[in-house]
Image (cartoon, rainbow, N blue to C red; front, side):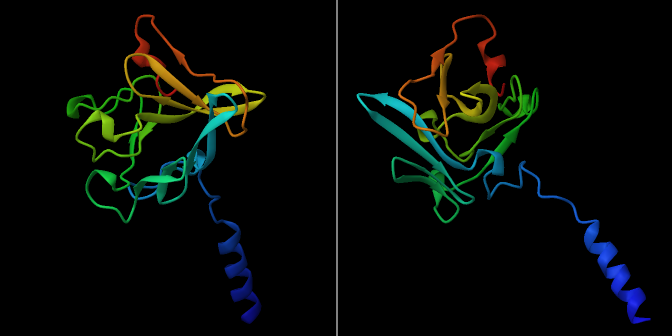
Length: 162
Protein backbone atom coordinates (compact mmCIF):
# COMPACT_ATOMS: atom_id res chain seq x y z
CA UNK A 1 0.00 0.00 0.00
CA UNK A 2 2.84 2.37 0.85
CA UNK A 3 4.55 1.52 -2.46
CA UNK A 4 1.46 2.40 -4.50
CA UNK A 5 1.14 5.75 -2.65
CA UNK A 6 4.79 6.56 -3.34
CA UNK A 7 4.38 5.73 -7.03
CA UNK A 8 1.28 7.91 -7.35
CA UNK A 9 3.06 10.81 -5.62
CA UNK A 10 6.06 10.35 -7.92
CA UNK A 11 3.84 10.35 -11.02
CA UNK A 12 2.06 13.45 -9.79
CA UNK A 13 5.35 15.31 -9.41
CA UNK A 14 6.64 14.27 -12.83
CA UNK A 15 3.65 15.89 -14.51
CA UNK A 16 4.53 19.34 -13.19
CA UNK A 17 4.54 22.14 -15.76
CA UNK A 18 7.84 23.90 -16.56
CA UNK A 19 8.21 27.54 -15.57
CA UNK A 20 6.91 29.89 -18.22
CA UNK A 21 8.89 32.88 -19.42
CA UNK A 22 5.76 34.89 -20.03
CA UNK A 23 3.40 37.35 -18.40
CA UNK A 24 2.46 36.42 -14.81
CA UNK A 25 0.20 39.27 -13.74
CA UNK A 26 0.20 43.00 -13.05
CA UNK A 27 2.49 42.86 -10.00
CA UNK A 28 5.51 41.10 -11.55
CA UNK A 29 7.61 41.68 -14.64
CA UNK A 30 7.77 38.98 -17.32
CA UNK A 31 10.78 36.70 -16.82
CA UNK A 32 11.91 37.17 -20.42
CA UNK A 33 12.54 40.88 -19.75
CA UNK A 34 14.41 40.50 -16.45
CA UNK A 35 18.08 41.24 -16.10
CA UNK A 36 20.42 44.15 -16.65
CA UNK A 37 20.30 45.75 -20.10
CA UNK A 38 22.77 48.30 -21.49
CA UNK A 39 22.65 51.06 -24.06
CA UNK A 40 25.73 52.95 -25.24
CA UNK A 41 25.58 56.61 -24.28
CA UNK A 42 28.81 57.76 -25.97
CA UNK A 43 32.33 58.52 -24.71
CA UNK A 44 32.68 55.12 -22.99
CA UNK A 45 29.48 55.57 -20.96
CA UNK A 46 26.44 53.28 -20.80
CA UNK A 47 22.94 53.54 -19.45
CA UNK A 48 21.86 50.54 -17.40
CA UNK A 49 18.27 49.34 -17.19
CA UNK A 50 17.73 46.73 -14.47
CA UNK A 51 14.48 44.78 -14.48
CA UNK A 52 13.83 42.50 -11.50
CA UNK A 53 10.72 40.58 -10.49
CA UNK A 54 9.17 43.50 -8.57
CA UNK A 55 11.12 46.61 -9.65
CA UNK A 56 12.56 48.55 -12.59
CA UNK A 57 15.64 50.76 -12.15
CA UNK A 58 17.64 52.94 -14.53
CA UNK A 59 21.23 53.92 -13.71
CA UNK A 60 20.69 52.88 -10.09
CA UNK A 61 17.53 54.97 -9.61
CA UNK A 62 14.35 52.98 -8.95
CA UNK A 63 11.65 53.99 -11.42
CA UNK A 64 8.84 51.58 -10.57
CA UNK A 65 8.38 49.07 -7.75
CA UNK A 66 5.58 46.95 -6.36
CA UNK A 67 5.79 48.74 -2.99
CA UNK A 68 5.55 52.27 -4.44
CA UNK A 69 2.35 54.31 -4.76
CA UNK A 70 0.73 56.32 -7.54
CA UNK A 71 2.38 56.36 -10.96
CA UNK A 72 5.64 54.90 -9.54
CA UNK A 73 3.88 51.64 -8.64
CA UNK A 74 4.86 48.72 -10.86
CA UNK A 75 1.77 47.72 -12.83
CA UNK A 76 2.52 45.56 -15.87
CA UNK A 77 0.08 45.49 -18.76
CA UNK A 78 0.59 42.94 -21.55
CA UNK A 79 -0.52 44.07 -24.98
CA UNK A 80 -1.00 41.55 -27.77
CA UNK A 81 -1.29 42.33 -31.46
CA UNK A 82 -4.53 44.23 -32.01
CA UNK A 83 -5.62 43.92 -28.36
CA UNK A 84 -7.08 46.74 -26.31
CA UNK A 85 -7.91 49.24 -29.05
CA UNK A 86 -11.27 49.97 -27.41
CA UNK A 87 -9.56 51.22 -24.22
CA UNK A 88 -6.94 53.34 -25.96
CA UNK A 89 -4.14 50.75 -25.69
CA UNK A 90 -2.89 48.93 -28.74
CA UNK A 91 -0.74 45.84 -29.12
CA UNK A 92 0.48 47.05 -32.51
CA UNK A 93 2.83 44.59 -34.27
CA UNK A 94 3.36 42.00 -31.56
CA UNK A 95 3.27 41.24 -27.85
CA UNK A 96 4.75 44.05 -25.78
CA UNK A 97 4.47 45.33 -22.23
CA UNK A 98 3.77 48.62 -20.52
CA UNK A 99 5.63 48.42 -17.21
CA UNK A 100 3.75 51.37 -15.75
CA UNK A 101 0.18 51.29 -16.99
CA UNK A 102 -0.90 53.53 -14.07
CA UNK A 103 0.93 56.53 -15.56
CA UNK A 104 -1.29 59.44 -16.55
CA UNK A 105 1.28 61.20 -18.76
CA UNK A 106 3.82 59.92 -21.31
CA UNK A 107 6.84 61.27 -19.44
CA UNK A 108 6.02 58.97 -16.49
CA UNK A 109 6.61 55.76 -18.45
CA UNK A 110 9.47 54.01 -20.25
CA UNK A 111 7.26 53.23 -23.22
CA UNK A 112 6.33 49.91 -24.75
CA UNK A 113 8.91 47.20 -23.95
CA UNK A 114 9.49 43.80 -25.61
CA UNK A 115 12.11 41.15 -26.16
CA UNK A 116 12.96 41.59 -29.82
CA UNK A 117 13.68 38.84 -32.31
CA UNK A 118 16.47 41.03 -33.70
CA UNK A 119 19.91 39.94 -32.57
CA UNK A 120 23.19 41.70 -31.88
CA UNK A 121 26.21 39.38 -31.72
CA UNK A 122 23.86 36.39 -31.61
CA UNK A 123 21.90 37.61 -28.55
CA UNK A 124 18.33 38.87 -28.52
CA UNK A 125 17.81 42.53 -27.68
CA UNK A 126 15.31 44.50 -25.62
CA UNK A 127 13.25 46.94 -27.66
CA UNK A 128 11.59 50.06 -26.27
CA UNK A 129 9.31 52.34 -28.25
CA UNK A 130 8.70 55.73 -26.73
CA UNK A 131 7.43 58.28 -29.23
CA UNK A 132 7.35 59.39 -32.87
CA UNK A 133 9.08 56.40 -34.47
CA UNK A 134 11.97 56.30 -32.00
CA UNK A 135 13.07 52.77 -31.11
CA UNK A 136 15.67 52.10 -28.41
CA UNK A 137 17.70 48.90 -28.55
CA UNK A 138 19.24 47.54 -25.33
CA UNK A 139 21.75 44.68 -25.14
CA UNK A 140 22.83 42.33 -22.34
CA UNK A 141 26.50 43.22 -22.91
CA UNK A 142 28.21 46.59 -22.76
CA UNK A 143 28.86 47.22 -26.44
CA UNK A 144 30.43 50.46 -27.67
CA UNK A 145 27.71 51.04 -30.26
CA UNK A 146 24.17 52.36 -29.93
CA UNK A 147 21.80 50.26 -32.04
CA UNK A 148 18.78 52.54 -31.49
CA UNK A 149 17.04 53.90 -34.57
CA UNK A 150 14.21 56.06 -35.85
CA UNK A 151 11.80 54.50 -38.32
CA UNK A 152 10.24 57.09 -40.61
CA UNK A 153 8.28 54.78 -42.89
CA UNK A 154 4.56 54.24 -42.98
CA UNK A 155 2.92 52.14 -40.29
CA UNK A 156 5.82 52.52 -37.82
CA UNK A 157 3.54 51.48 -34.96
CA UNK A 158 3.38 47.98 -36.44
CA UNK A 159 7.10 47.61 -35.65
CA UNK A 160 6.36 47.65 -31.91
CA UNK A 161 6.74 44.19 -30.42
CA UNK A 162 8.77 42.70 -33.27
